[in-house]
Amino acid sequence: MLRTETMLSRVADSLYWMSRYLERAEHTARLIDVDLQLRLDQSPEFATGRWLRLIEALQVPASLVGTAENLRQVREQCSTEMWEQLNRLYLQMLEKHPEGGWVLESHLFFRSVQEGAQLFQGVTDSTMSHGEGWHFIQLGRFVERTDALSGLIGAHFSRLTQPSDQAAEGTEYLEWVGLLKSCAAFEAYCKTHSAELRPQRVAEFLLLNPEFPHSVRFSVESVHSALRMIGELTDRKVVQPVRLAGRLRAALSFSQVEEVMADGVYLYLENVRRQCSQIHAAIQQVYFDYLIESTISA
Image 1 (spheres, rainbow, N blue to C red):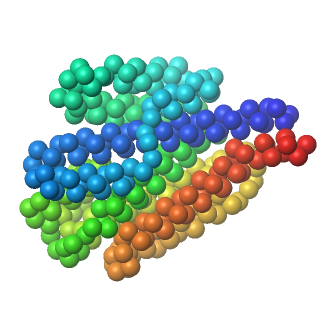
Image 2: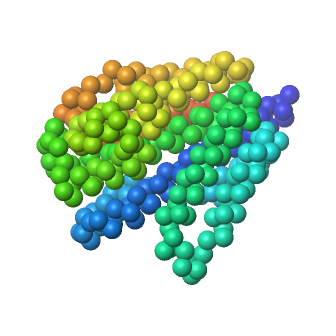
Image 3: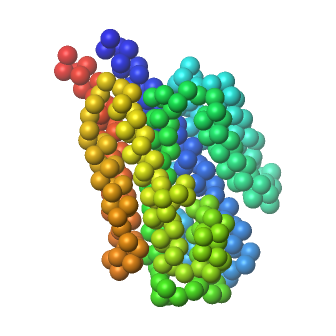
């Protein structure tokens, strides 16, 4: 029984990290693509400042190799369509070589990474049973998204110079467009608030919107939902990860954007990232590492 449970623990670990790596690759591809596109309309000075913010936000490497390796370890848990799509994306990436002049077509390359990752998510939802394994994939996806969004938005707002309720103009306008596009949120924001970009409205939309998939609040609620479902589907009724996620979910649900702006968006999001790290550590301890400790003690 112990051997079987240990195998399942490793499967859950691989599914979780496969999903985190894929989300990280998609996020990174979007950020770099947006940055390269905005460089065409901005001076080198502004482009350099935005690139530094991007580097600050991307504090961890992204790798489709890690995604493919983790999926390989759980091949029997995934559908044929999932396996084929991820391998297609991986091989497509390997075909690109810097010396081949592909940089001139970088937009197509980064777009294909994003679309390939999104297609994998859609295939997963359509062809994999929505049981324990599927919920670990959702968990990895939204833990990664919570951390990545918080880092990106925080890095941008840490350099806020204009009044938060003032409409952005000129080069500042392009900077806010860049942030929204980096969060796949520009069109959704405009449908809610029009194309007038005010920092406070941007903060409210990206942090506290309960309906947009790339908002921090939506991501945290998805983490909490996945953990709650995993708890119901497994025999490990440990409440710590769910409690930690529920606490963060409640904080975001009851936050007011005016208070967030007054206290500082960067500090608010650093606290979100700290709590996200605690949730990840609890997930690791409860679902991935506990049987190793049991084996050693036995």
